[in-house]
Image (cartoon, rainbow, N blue to C red):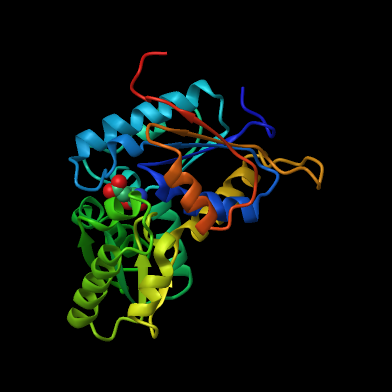
Length: 277
Ligand code: DGL
């Protein structure tokens, strides 16, 4: 039975969820975290909904064995399946809350009174219309404009964060969105990988505010843990443990953890989430 000392699970298709991990580490330093990144099967964003659900269930089943008290789904693409007819519902089967990053970001966008918002995200997230749907359920007047990228998450997964290819891909999508909707001043980085290269986005449109949904999600995790009486109340000096489980390789984690300024100690296990345990 999970309790206050139990870890929080964080899942992503790859290294992108480290952006949520960075925010959680700042907001809830005492909480222990088990991270799962399915780098071997990334990018998820060009896959079918059925494939994404099948892969996601394997990470959730693994975390159920690890007795987590909550799972933050850092991946926008996975979170979009929760609100896609025919796919939704599976996230409620695990006995712990499974939190959508898209829902957390949508709630913030509404409460912060945005009016016209761009979303750059994976092909699946944009095709699902999930951002628009969740935002407009709360406020039908907010206009949401999507711009899909089939390549950017995969380029970031390669770990060369200052490559000309990333620069060109970011430039292309910011230009596409801004030329179609020149009065948009707020753009959601609607894929967890994108805030890793937030500086490149800013360089392409310095007058635009780029929103990082990982901040919304970390706050949502805090609220939900508190409401459930599951916030960790340990010693003030204690920093939680961080375990990274990945179907990929270590070097890209070294690179991104350093880029995001995550300072807590961590261990890494290479794991095939599909293997029988
Ligand atoms: N990081 C994921 C997201 O937030 C998707 C990247 C991928 O395509 O695997 O959407």
